[in-house]
Image 1 (tube, rainbow, N blue to C red):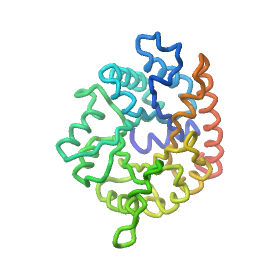
Image 2 (image 1 turned 45 degrees about the vertical axis):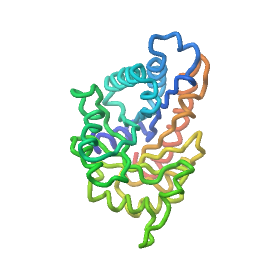
Image 3 (image 1 turned 60 degrees about the horizontal axis):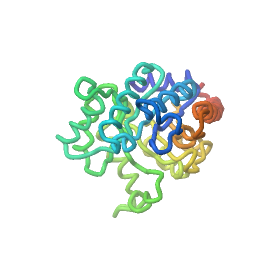
Length: 280
């Protein structure tokens, strides 16, 4: 999915919601455990319940890889299902990859080359700290995106990402400035945590046109209004992720209904913010 198609999807759905499929098998409703593939069945029902309110889905690879082959089969089935809805959603592999060039080339094939791996994600999260040659292999695929980690929402982000270099630039700012030489606003996004919303204005001074993937709204306590105030641009430029607050809104038989309610509430808020900005 290219940039124009993503922007059109946001406008058509009046939403910039990304649902994180952090589908931990120990947390899914107990009645699904009798299914042949409980995680896929959970994901399928979550997707069906939220697709009208959601522009993107983001499986976190940890919850699939940790279960070995059965977990990867659940992921593969989930992606096949999402591909059947490909015009209705953008897909992100939350994998946080990045290694020397030849290894990154293989990682890129794993997520983008359907013929090689069976997966056909639109985007993958990538760690930038090994430099350009660890990122550039992902950027060689047409209409695919790198989502580069810049300023994350976890507590440990302060250990390194906000420290100053000798020139007084914070590390996350250096990532933003340097990486613009590698990709463009057509194929590169940045992870900026919602729990750092006040820093979004600084981010936008450096990357005014790029899309930002913003985790941390919902269970982590980030404010959607603040994220939009500081981070939205004329194309919206945001994908705001919510995971636990939607997919685990209920652990009962009504889990999909409750997920839909949570997603719908966020979509209503997002529609209001898009209208206020004059984007729709």
